[in-house]
Length: 113
Length: 115
Image 1 (spheres, rainbow over the protein chains, first blue to last red):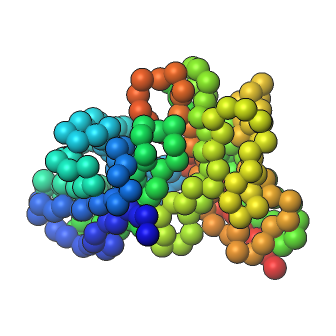
Image 2 (image 1 turned 45 degrees about the vertical axis):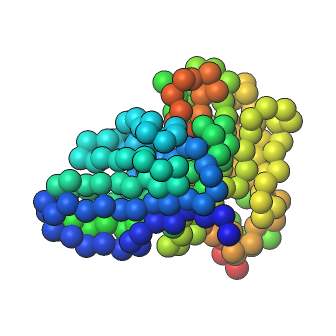
């Protein structure tokens, strides 16, 4: 089944404790992206990647890191999480660029206390 | 700069009635336009897109959307609503002429269909 898989689905952590949210797609998509969803704000892009080893900042990149060492994986790293990063996170992928629709993962609900 | 607006936070419709979820956009060039649906505890699912061609686009689950260039709108419609259509709907836009590979999402509209 073609899909984007995120892990974990739920995570509660403490301020300052480094964490990684994994994202993997099995569709050989070139384009991958991370979004956060907050009430009343819709989805805001954190980082995106056009292909392996090519990443760029989205609208809200502060406090986040990403890497794209392999085509299928695009992990999101929070080096020192803070409570304002409590949010619902989505990974998405697309065949090539953004002219095509995204396929989204199921989401990761992160709570930072 | 590109932007997208969904002017209604919530839309309430009786089952069997037609529904419309509104979306307006702003781009400097020609737009790519998308609609996504989010069910509780799920990721967003692609419904339909407009790239070029016919202004009326048909998508999944009986939904359609009408592209109106003069009004810069891309409203989502369905002739007869089902209770199972209740969900959160997002409109999204990308500027076709932009070098930035980014889709901008609206803030979402919660659609509630009452039996």
